[in-house]
Image 1 (cartoon, helix red, strand yellow):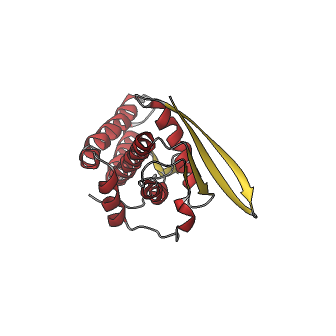
Image 2: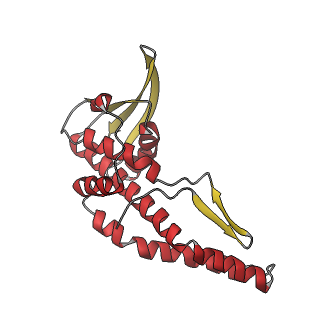
Length: 199
């Protein structure tokens, strides 16, 4: 099992392969998610500003797996389910091609071959996405357990993107939490704040 960058979600058709830039590879957010997990593992606190000392280190794929195993209780289950998720995704794509009555036999064959050619790519894309969702769930659990009310972070390295994604995860929990992001400028630097309201 490995984590590595692959790129945006493929858009496959009978003429070749393109990429959907509105669905980027979640691998690009995993470094920030892991930094946040490390920063929010210090126990109960009202304000968390541990990230100011971040040296901007980029974790390797192996380091990301190790850190996710440290924080995510069900990471092995997530990784084990990636094959089934990829299979379902590919089957849906194949069904759409086979249901398209406007295709010639050659176009259908080319399209199906292009889907098959991207099978490993889809697997890595799904793996990265699953690992990211696992990191978000672990972040939500840390925030719940420590009853963290505010997280302040520098506006770089995708922290804002990760915490924006986290808002919907917090809202969907069995014990929902309301959260909102705000941005302010301090001494010519921009900082974000995630404010969390526990119910």
